[in-house]
Image 1: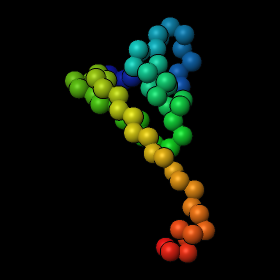
Image 2: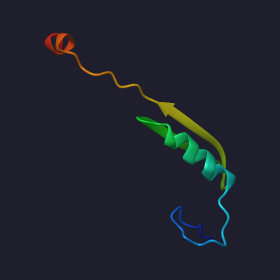
Image 3: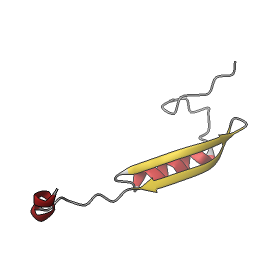
Image 4: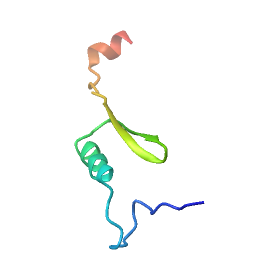
Length: 65
């Protein structure tokens, strides 16, 4: 069974895959949400980002809820 290097690997001999840089980019600007990888035949083929916007609760909305 083939093994894949850990994302935290400190081995300089292994170059970072292109998709890893894209995942980092998607995560860096995200406050609340999900970054999802789609894998096909053992390769990352798609990166999806879903961002949530959280609204602060106000006293008026708390009184009605």
